[in-house]
Picture 1 (cartoon, rainbow, N blue to C red):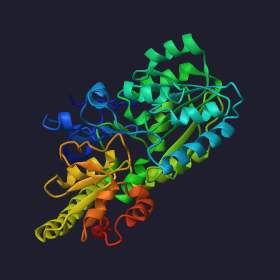
Picture 2: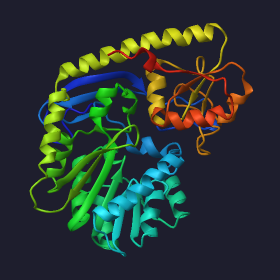
Picture 3: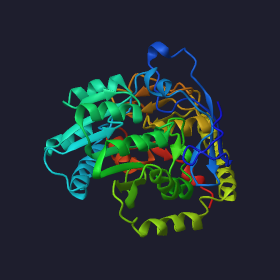
Length: 407
């Protein structure tokens, strides 16, 4: 079904800006037993709201299908880089929010409970909400109690009745997954104490435009936030932006800290919105240029890939990430062109990439080849990955579409 109205302001004033073709769910890795079953495939298209500046996917998909039909494989503690980020996040937000011991922290999209566990270690009472039973069980091993479900006003009442109002609500890389962000943020507002803090992070749309890294667009990401669209949404629930900043996670994420107060909004917020407007984030011509560039870059890179394969050389992709699946499917890189995808996660090894059906193995596969090419999909941690791979094979030749980036 097509979304005809903006998820933030509700108006029917949408313009199509991005078309990446048809894609499966990017964060669903296929186990051996389901390898021969067809994937659910939907057009991956984004619209821009000409009224409030919000960017959203055009086609609705079933959220339960996105997270529950196949065991969800991404974990918050999937790498040392991730754990370091969440360790720092917990300390910074604990201080920023002026939390005291015994403060009640609610984490929405709590995943395997790693971040909630850090707040518990600091003396807080933390509870998670997550749609995946599998992740809830992993969180239980960390002694993080998790409510299984898709957060909204429905669950806010259940949480209030059971735990009372929260001092802090956290929703990292999940707020943008909501099919009803207005209901989501109103649920947050109901749970927060007066003066309480709501913090969320997600990939910053402006960074996507500037870098040309389209691969963070996928069906699980329903919304793509700018400060302008975030402000419009938060205002519908009586929340004010206290600060907005870019942090070094997922290649650059927008962290917004809001408070349930009647104070005037920080003047820096409008400055950022003006910068977004000046860059052309709300101008459809910006997106025509964006699409032209990524299509041309794809054509040039694929010429190189085909030449490598004509010479009988293996190509191994590195990092079984959701963004990697968007990249593989947009470029048409399936198991006839990519021999393996490597990943350190035990929850992904032995599975296959969606639609492209590339087997996922450990990095040690590189040691089996003399001459081998590597394509890093998890580009945000490329430096760390190259050091790890060098231990397995010092002769790896790296290839990247960035070689053909169009200025």
